[in-house]
Image 1 (cartoon, rainbow, N blue to C red):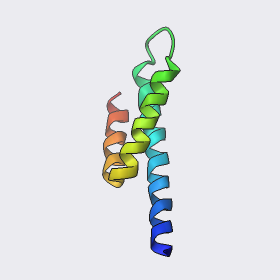
Image 2 (cartoon, helix red, strand yellow):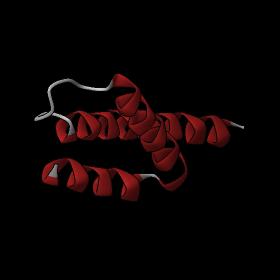
Image 3 (cartoon, rainbow, N blue to C red):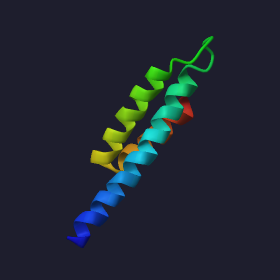
Length: 70
């Protein structure tokens, strides 16, 4: 049981980092527009959370690359 809760906690941390990176990428892509559509940023954050929840470290590394190029 302790391994499961650690796994869930670790997944939550991965998901939170993925959501943060994806939301930053969503804001960076829209930076040069006249306004930022926050619903797009929210969708990006939700997608990043789900992706990092299931994939883990590899998703975070790829989201860092996306943020770097945006």
